[in-house]
Image (cartoon, rainbow, N blue to C red):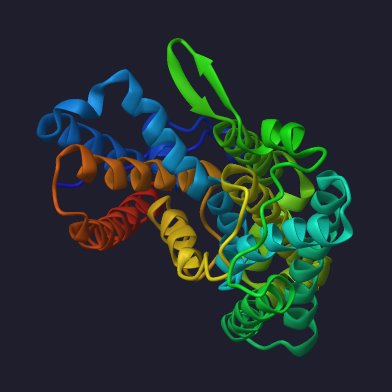
Length: 350
């Protein structure tokens, strides 16, 4: 049974000023499917794992979500812009390695290494954006090449400088304690111990959401993701927009890399491989379309929360962790189907 058709607009009324029903607004939100999925995952693990609802578990789940969510927010913006970045996972490790090895070799304050790492990591992002816009090759090919190059550089330079596959410890160097407070400290809120990465995550999601819905650059992102040639025809700076999106991913990789370094003091050169798929999965679960032009940073944050609840919920339920990838794949398929259904319903009501 179909619903009643919407009432016709009064003669002479501007259709842009017509009121939109709350249901239509809700169905138009790209993160609706992920929110429904997050509620389902929460209820499921609350029933099967007694410790899942404990106060200490909240901080653990949010921390697991934040390590993915920091990267998922700019990756979501990049996907809305119609592109991918397969180098994002190893770029995090590259950022940590540059900070550690520069500080150790130059015997400098670790903050010098941190800022050098920021410049180098932004250089990686600029390289991806420049190569994409100049060669017009698919972003899959460009960033796959960057992924392979960074993987080799991470291992090669680490072995060349330190003689092993991991960096030397810098925990006793000047500035390490203050840098750890910024990138890897804890804070207690209402009896819950929270990692500072949760604040970084919340800040990045807030900024990404503001960019998408409140700025001209946000309109450009949706435009180039929907149809780049049409966007260029109406004056959208496509090249600048795409390079900016890759710089955003690089900045988030720098933040994640510094957290990795200052949490453990040393960095393994082989870390990060495969994480890029996790960031993309979080964005897709959150409502981003593979084809671009649709999605939200909030949806990617919800996708990261689903990831955190699932990864820790399986542990709290005392299941074999080998099942984690199965649940992640199942959630990806279900969330994609639900998002597609919600989008069709939204289009049907417009």
